[in-house]
Length: 170
Image (tube, rainbow, N blue to C red; front, side, top):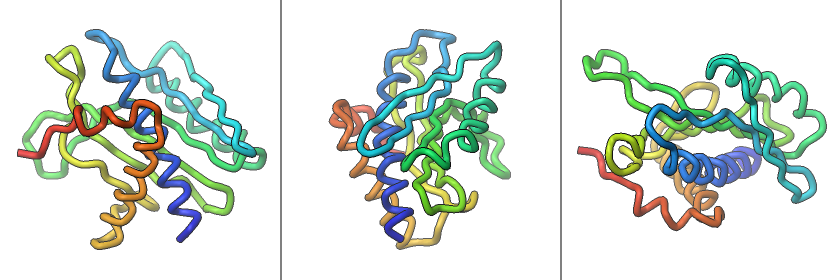
């Protein structure tokens, strides 16, 4: 479980950075997908600029194969849309971070729905979710992982803004 915890905490840190970037984007702008990698406590951000968001995301996902044998922690942050099965509601903007630590088979994924700054004030909508192997773990495991992710959020220099951005689910 420690490997998952470390990856989820790192994912939370990167999610805080992703939200910070998104909080300042103007109308029509999207987050350029980026990776944060860490080796021996040193972090590096790698942006994946391309002609399209989809191509940038694919390049970011491919970076996992490039880095997984040389880094201790890897993440990919991006922006997208999320829909809910059986819902007639429009798709929601979502920040997604995949995070991995040496020893894991595949990355864990964090999702946070948000309202862009262009819609008024930037807001985080609902609650952060964590999935492993593409599935949200049952309670109480999920709540424990979210708590760990929020530890990572608080480690970011701008993590204190998370609560100010939060908007409770209606």
